Length: 222
Image 1 (cartoon, rainbow, N blue to C red):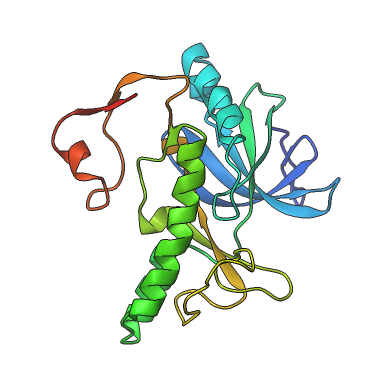
Image 2: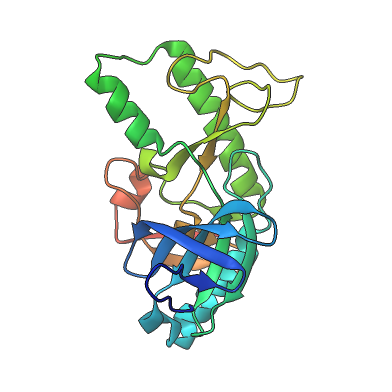
């Protein structure tokens, strides 16, 4: 990561870093500008201390390659992987500009909103499509929570689901606007069954984990 003086922007390669939108124990997530393509993207950069650990480093890179296999309009796209001049691996991700589902629901509930059956079905259809694509790539997400579902604007005309014309889009409502689609994110919580079989430590957000993950310290992926 290239440093910056007063009034200058921090950079990683061709990416100009903007605000930090997420900080975890393993990585920091930035909104960034791809100056070559003049596009807004998201950079997930492995923490410097973990970049010195060969096992963590290789897992981070391998995850990026695995997640590139997923093809769905409802899963965040991994555009690229790379490494900063300080040997910190990073992933370049699709940017979602309208926040998380958790933020949307909290704001609506504060105004007295209650989800209609049509809105719930719209949400379920989009997430089902996302999970179908994740599973087709032999990957398990492990943290399907509202904070990991993003809302993004869809340029031009489109329905709330962003599905093909031969699908049925049920209800736009206020939960998902007619010019939006949902994106499943935080793919770092995924388990690649093609690379890692056997036991894995249970993770995810309390209240949204599948019951089998709460039954014991680990789950089996085969």
